[in-house]
Image (cartoon, rainbow, N blue to C red; front, side, top):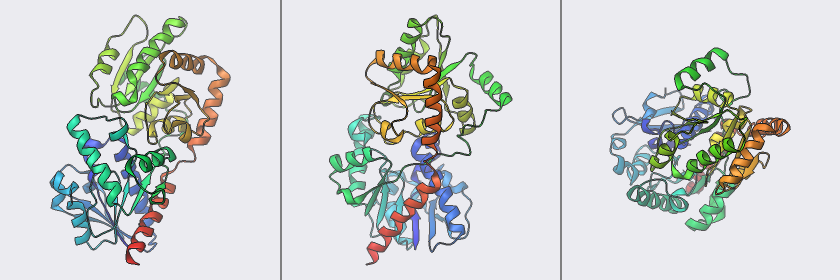
Length: 384
């Protein structure tokens, strides 16, 4: 079976985003599968002229790079070009790793819809949001099968996009345990990172795009409220991630530091540095209003960092209800939960142990193999 793969989400501008990490890791596992045959061949679309990182992936037997000039033209590719290219390459099925490409083609498509944030909680301008909703609904309609990363997202897809339950498979994302693990951080590397980022105190960490959906303004307010309540705590808050849509208010709040507790904007950091940041943190906080999976939460758990999260969307589900939870709309509740996780030693040890155990369930190998099963089934159903 020949499987074509849409590489649109591997554009270099998406490197620090979850959809890029997802596609990159699934492809890495597909390459491993291809080495052992398994009766499948992969064709990853690539172009050297559009800043797409697919071109840097080394082809191997049963895993080829398939050149397509249509990939250089964003809208042409997303509104039919990918499907046309899949048909021209004689693929049996096309895998679309994110709901940003409309799978209009005689070739059956399997699309990953990570979540329905364009409908429930838009995180871009009105113009971009409208485009996202069109593509989201188109993917739901034209895909032979849909993959999503949590039961929570599946329920939303079925309810909001009118998709039959049987069309949607829940396949959890993975975590790169070679990078994100509970091994002690290298002291010299940690010291170097602290020097580069200006971190000179114990700190609380959030990593992810700085945007309203992440609820970071309330996190900053809760952090400052916690410090005001407990004068013995000496901590900074580190926000690691690039500035996304409508981030100005959050950045202004971060820069308006008081007499205690700085908010450090670390920017987007490479994976190796991110793992160090997580391991060095006193605690990780995920205050999001809505998530489809939350890889940052799983990465923090995998590193053994005590992690507390919102009691909303998929977060209790993916974390296995083993963390500490707070109302994301309540600054007071968030501050109380943060203080408990910082000062209660028994609670911290429980969060650490249970977090590591739960995070170990999420691997990219499992994610890729389950994804391949859906792709093969979709290709075969079209042949019957």
